[in-house]
Amino acid sequence: MLLAASESEGGFHAPSIADFFPPAILFEGTIFQIDRIWIVRVVATVALLAIFVIAARRAKLVPGRFQNAIEMILDFVRVQVVEEIMGKENAKRFVPMITTIFCAILAFNITGIITGLNMAGTARIGIPLLLALWVFVTYWYVGIKKHGLGGYLKSNLFPPGIPAPIYLIVTPIELLQILIIRPASLAIRLVANMVAGHIMLVLCFAATQYFFFEAAPAMKALGVLSLAGGFAFTLFEILVAALQAYIFALLAAVYINMSLEEEH
Image 1: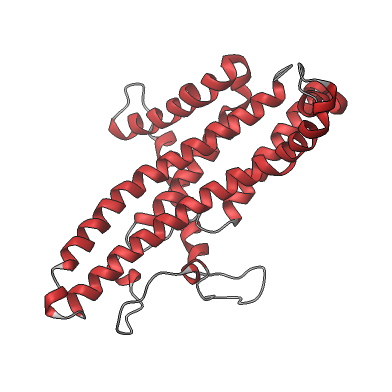
Image 2: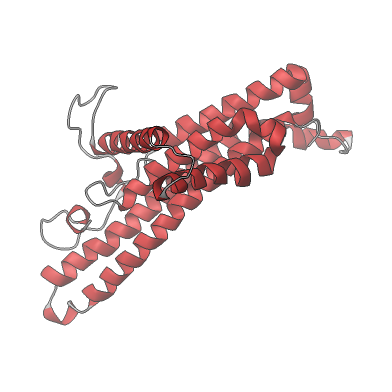
């Protein structure tokens, strides 16, 4: 983390938005461009798949610690997120989807505090937007399948119990909700939190290197404070990584469930 945080050319270099657009390693300027964040995402994906493949192949009737940990994650998503929002009957259809979203986001988020990677795979809009579009397509599909296009639009754009003139205000807002605001809020919230977390970590550890190795002797003691702050933010970032995965999965379940309800 300390090495990755500094640009190592002397003086203090604060993190910037350029951190999230590193130079290309291969195929620069093409849609197949490979850079550091691309590699982080591949590493996270491979690691996540390996964990679940190993857990499935080594599954036992009496689980060990590793299997217990995996089952706790799966049960948490199924019971505390999907079934809690949708009920057991509707939940059966969407547990695989919501579990995939939760685990993928958690894996991509946690790379931000892993030494050698030091960047969340969700710190750039691509992955969050892709997952948000998956949720968007799903809640439109299930809503139209259950209610028909007209019934789905009517239940969303014309909420019951509102005086007819108020629909002039409410209907455009509701249309924006189901078309733009819901998926955009999912993607932007996730990206913003991961960007902020990365900047705070780099700021603390870059400052630590500067204070310890380059600052005047009277300022070196400040390096202890920035180092302590860096470790504190690392622990906080672990919490944020899990919390953002939970919030994304929870809202995905809520949006899908709203499409299935008769009135909301």
